[in-house]
Length: 374
Image 1: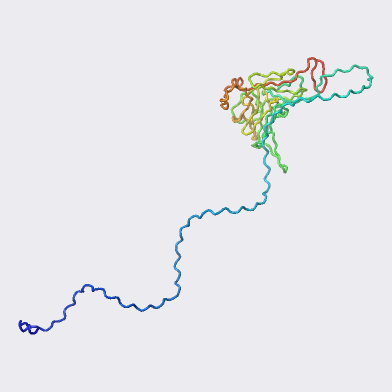
Image 2 (image 1 turned 90 degrees about the vertical axis):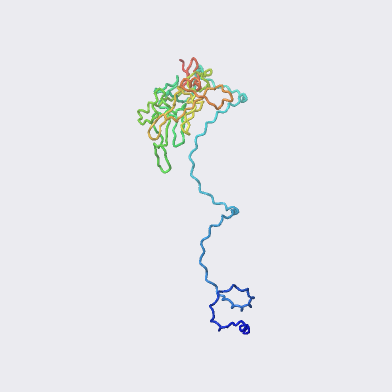
């Protein structure tokens, strides 16, 4: 170098001062992996503190239905229940057919001769005495007391009672028998008593039903509470006693049936079955005089209750025996409607007659005695 400087005649000075630090160079290449470090000391065995409680989880899904359990043991007998209320009276049974005539019995032995009489009087002829007595009731359906048939005695007169009802239990009265003719009329004649000596009357649920006087024009269906106003609306009746039992015939048509041979008519009428109010009925047997009423009136009866009032209520219904109609089989169940009293009588309601056995031409029956000449 010195030679070159000499040649070139270049003067070289003294070294300069250290320069400023240069900028950082680019990263170098990755070095080789260093040696493994020393193994660390073992950790402590102490248990850490419990963490805070977590939030309440959501309800789980419903579990599957379990199997049926075993049948339990038989329980002890329960206490006796209270006595139930009395049931409604059953429907009257139909009379059975008359039995066949029995075989003729063997002839009796001939009796011995009687002792000779001492009065030398003529034997008395057999009389037509009928010592049986029959009692029945007749109803006028008017404000007049009816008359008993000929050769019959009037025992008493009164007002025509159809039924009493206590709660829902009816005490029906056969209009052909004496119990249907009450000597006194009162709105409510029922007295109820219980064990312990307690009795009561005039309960709101008690009712009485009376045959109505068809001659009076019926007022609007509003309760009447004055007995002097109510009484004229009640039919009059009579209880009769005689030696003959009345029989009743129904025609099932618009024609009045005829009495059989040896019987005479007492009165003609209309075939009445029953009165109905709610679930309570007041039926009449068709072999009773009570099933043959002299008049066809609508309504047939008046209702009185424990509040002391009486009225012709619109929900009360009368049932009559109907005339037989020529109806095609396909028409059954369709029903027939009759409008107006004339149409009802001529086409709807069956007719009836009450008959009594006729007395012999030369003698008459009397109560408890022999035949007497007319």
